[in-house]
Image (cartoon, rainbow, N blue to C red; front, side, top):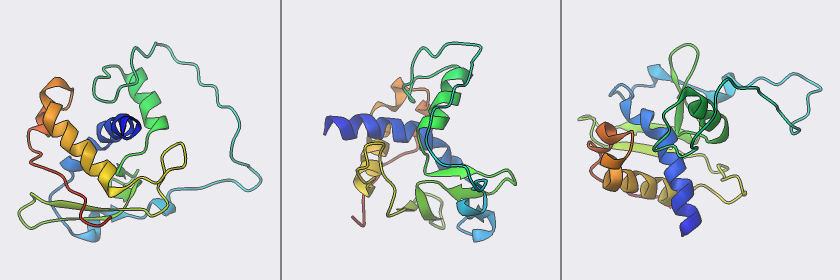
Length: 159
C-alpha cells in the first residue's frame, strides 16, 4: 500500500495537465503515440545516459517541484496519462484511449494493458483513481491546488 501511494503520488503529479485538455471527445485532437516513437536500427535499449545540468534538483516530488531542472528529470522518469505531440495533438502515454462527457465533468481513461511501474508490476485503474483522490484530498498543499479544486472524485470502473 505504501509503495502504491508513493508511486500514485508521482503519477498524479505528472498527469495533471491531462485535466486541462480541451473539453472534447472528438478524435481530431488525438494522435497515436506509436507514430512518434522512432528507433534507429542497430540501437539496442539500455545502458547509461549522462546529461550535465546547470542546476540542482532539490526534490523529485512531483507535487512540490519548483525548478525546470526538477521538471526535466521528472519528465524522463515518470510517464503521464497523455502527452502533447509536436503537432499539438494529444497522444496516450499510459492511457490507450480516453473520452470526455458532454458536460466536460467526467473523464474516462483506458490504461494500456502492458503499462507497468518501474518494478514491472502493472499500473492499474485503482492506482490512477487513488492518485487523483489523494490529489483532491491534499490539493491545497501542492503546486496543483487549482487543478485539485476541480476534482470531485476518481473511481476505477473497470479493473
